[in-house]
Image (tube, rainbow, N blue to C red):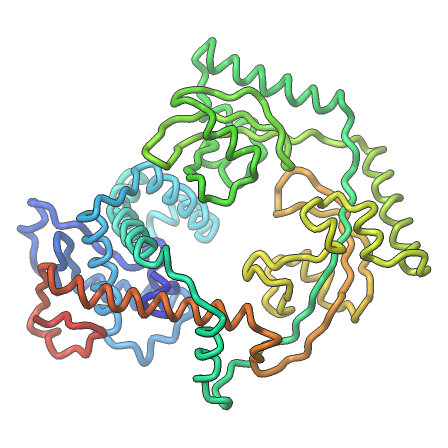
Length: 455
């Protein structure tokens, strides 16, 4: 719930704020109940869990009171309650997919599944999942409600300017050293025979599922190269607003429920999609991705090609932008000289010390203005198919400085928009409390809460 409190994202992470939905059986077990919001209740142990999880995420809790954590929980439960009243839908598939992903991360953190179960004092994997199912569903309902509140909020340049001017000069945040970058991508050529081999393999998988009843889930685990959905058998949900590549989205929305697509191509390789369920605007599907592999000779040829391009740039036979227009295989930025967009901000600037990808960081961190990096064989993300050669030039460089309206407009706009959304959420909370059953235990009545929770 990152719009409610700036630290909430660090606390309300998976398995973080442990809250439950009040069932008939649980109403008998009222010891430790400190608050009720609609059909949700909050336990004293949830406050303790908030402290533990905050510490685990590196948050200094020395100045955080129990009231602080209670406030976050109250906001979260009100969101979830109203989401149910407004018939917002969070499917079991979404919840289970999220749990699958987080369990994989936790097993990686603790070393084994047994160690993970011990850390959460659970005797079995089934108990572990059952315990957290309602927690995750409640949090996702809250997220859905918050998204509904802020979905139409926009901000004008005049509002951004007023927001910036209202910040005392001594309080302006410092922006670290930044660069703007251009790139040239050279992909190894893949033969028609190799592409056909992948298409044939996907057709075989499709026929096994349709004709012989094989499990698409198991086939995805066995053959798919999409690391993001591999562990869940290729499972994902999507709407038309989600940022999937055009070909993938068009194919998904052309299918009928229960249908499996023919193999089709995107920039990532070849796919087949199994459309499991249609729920209003939302699709639940599974997919398998297989990427054709270039030959060793094609990889060598790509390396030689990009080396020659780099040499031509260094010898001033052409500019980096001219080379990008002529040869780069990245069509999205071919016409603007290979200019790279920061996916985290939508801006063209990268703050050096905030670059998380270690390979990308190693390529750009020591470059000087107008310097061209050595080519590197990379992928769009670790383990992803479709590796290619990439070289980068620093086109602009900005030293560390206090946030400047002209230089840092996109960053300031993002903060101003976030602030405007937060104000809308705060207003919504205050209004919604009036029409919601809320009960807070006597020993928390003296808390200074952010809204009119004490009735």
